[in-house]
Image 1 (cartoon, rainbow, N blue to C red):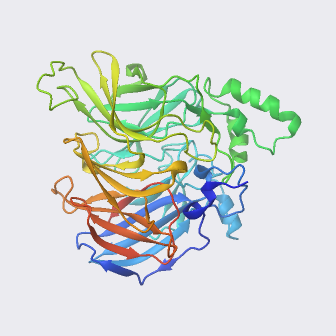
Image 2 (image 1 turned 120 degrees about the vertical axis):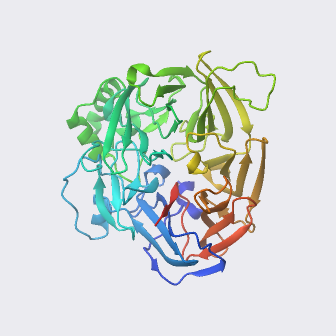
Image 3 (image 1 turned 135 degrees about the horizontal axis):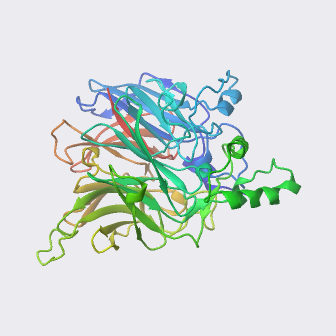
Length: 494
């Protein structure tokens, strides 16, 4: 049985590289001084195509160092979970942290914060600190201040530099955790929020005054989570016990430890679509507590990634002079999937995702849903200086069936309600692109977009730099190998 998430550019690469002589076409702007980093799944050991889920692959971080108009190096490194270290014949560490389950090397995002490089993952799995050169230091629990795992999608407040996040873990029962990490890398605040059950809360939204939670119908599934290592006569009672606990009460630590040790990389993912689970968003004041959360119903769907969110006191349609409803609203621009992990349990492949706008009316107590762009797209990004504030532009990558990259980068002008696209030709496939301003006071699209583009003809990838205003190519750094289809990355300035 085949698995599309192990084929083509989803297939893992087999080598770690350290390349210091990189060919460049075009130019690298002098203001780029830092590292472009990107994370993704790259199974090291042999996998079973019948059960492998793309989200469960061993993590591998890729990075390119840019300085003085030059590309100084490209490196790719597996994140050293205990299983990866053992498979590579390297010594494993003793557990001296409280960072969460170590069964899966962090494979979803990579950021720089408080002088550290962090490979991130979600669901109660351990994050890992890396060196500047991407070698693994060890699991990260933020100096012991945040036990039990973190998230793949923290958001940095542009004003304070603090990281805001929402974390989920099946062992917490029907609770997710909002946290704030200070600029010193230590936890400043946590709030436990009660939700409907045990959802996969992949991301959240942040505005100047509010935190927004997405409580949607992809939930922990005992059927998927009880491993074949459990004797057959005990599997049914084990599933019943888990079904009775998860999403209702905190799961006892011995049970979470046992299950955590059994949830291996490169295998099934224990979350799937639950049609009985309500779809809703929660809004909490940033300085509020669990009792302050207000919940609003939305149509059944799933959201991996919001583009951005902001507050609007004059209605969502600011160009409509006849708009007489001036109540406080929160605008959520999201990539909406009609459902997720219902019939395909190997990766995201349940209908085309669109760019939608949800307007949460805090006075009327309801959400208005509208379509902004019906092209199938994912990996939305915004100028991160505008996180939580009104934005004009957003960027996304078109996708085909099974999360395959469809070859086009989109630039949305949300003020005009239009978009332009940039193809790369000859079957080339762009991944997620991130925006880097040319200087601190640059306009919203004054700078470059950067991301990996895979060329199947030569089986290699380029780090491609585009003018964010025009989408014209500025430069391309040619890598010695391909970068497999993966998830998220960021620019980490020096």
